Amino acid sequence: MNRLKKKAIILSIAGFIAGILIGIIISLLTASSEETPTNLWSRLIYLLAGGIHGAIAMGSSIIYEKEDWSIAGVTITHFVITLASFYTLGTIQGWLNFGDAVFWIITIVFIVVYIIIWLANYLAYKRAVKEMNNDLEKIQEKK
Image (cartoon, rainbow, N blue to C red; front, side, top):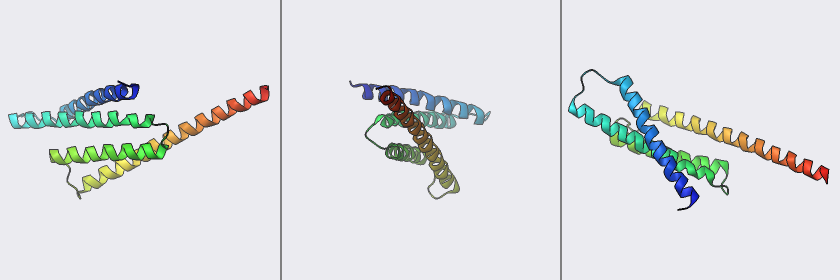
């Protein structure tokens, strides 16, 4: 198994665990004192969906390792994968309805977050390139 596949599997497992932990925290914060078997099953499904979403989001972050893609390209690809999985899982669970205000708020938040991610990556890579260029200039000056 190559390094990227292994890393994607590890990231997916970590994302699944993180998704479940976040789901547990949310469940604890929103739990009522009267839990019914139906409610418990829906919470388990909710936790499983959170784990799946975490696995998809973290596992697909391996795409940032693609050195031959632009920062915008990998960010947009990860955005589409993550948002599509979120929409799919939210719709299956019945708490996300297309066209509702919540749908549009979530979409706007996703877009803003991914613009911030792209900007942070862009600035980090720009700084790294500048440092490499400075190092190359120093090497040229020594010759």
